[in-house]
Image (tube, rainbow, N blue to C red):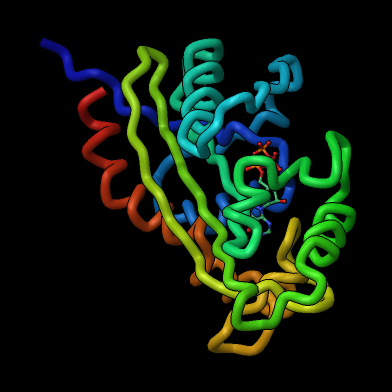
Amino acid sequence: MPRKKRPDKIVLATRNRGKIREFKFLLRQIPLNILTLDDFPEVPEVQETGETFFDNAFKKAYEIATSLGMITLADDSGLEVDALGGAPGVYSARYAGDKATDEENYLKLLKELKGVPLERRTARFRCVIVVCDPHGAWLKAEGVWEGLISFSPRGRYGFGYDPVFLIPDLGKTAAEIPPKFKNQLSHRANALRELIELLPTFLQII
Ligand code: ITT
C-alpha cells in the first residue's frame, strides 16, 4: 500500500495578532508551514458558544479543519481570577462587552477587584489547544500560568490582560517582560510543550 503523504501545513484558527505571533514562535521547531485565518479571509468567525475552553477550542478546530480540509490548531484561552469565582474565564475576550478592547477588559477587572488585597488577587491564564484533522480526529493539550492581578496596568508588551497579570517571582507584569521570556513561561507555551510531545505521533497516524 502506498504511504499516506505526511501533512506539510497546519492552519492556526485565529486572527488574533498577539496569538499568531506567539504560536509561530513556539511552533518554529515543527516542520510544518503555518497558515492562519488571514490566509482564508472567506472563512467566517466561529462563534465561541461553549461553556468550557475545551468546547470552544474543539468547535473552532473541528469546523475549520472540516471546512478547509486541512489540519487545524485552535486554542481557547482566558484568565481565571479566584476572587471572582473563576471569572472572566471563557468570557475573557468580551468581559467588558462584545466589542470591548483589551484595555476596557482589564480596567473592568481592576474595578471588580477594587479593595481586594494582593494575597487574594490570585489568578491564572489557562490555554486549551485542540488539533483536528479533516476527518474529525483530534488531540488536546492544556497549560496554565499562575500569577496575581496587579493594582494598576504596567508594561507595553503582549496583549489582552498582560498589563495587569503579575508574575510573582519577577515582580513584573506579563507586559513588562519581553516576548521571548513570556514565550517560555506562558499558559500557551505550557500547552504547546505538551502538544509538541504528542503531535508527531498524531500526524503520522492520520
Ligand atoms: P481567537 O478566538 O480568534 O483565537 P480571541 O482573542 O477571541 O482570539 P480567545 O477566545 O482565546 O481569543 O480569548 C482569549 C482572551 O483571553 C483574549 O482576548 C485575552 O483577553 C485573554 N488572553 C488569552 N491569552 C492571553 C495572554 O497570553 N495574555 C493576555 N491575555 C490573554
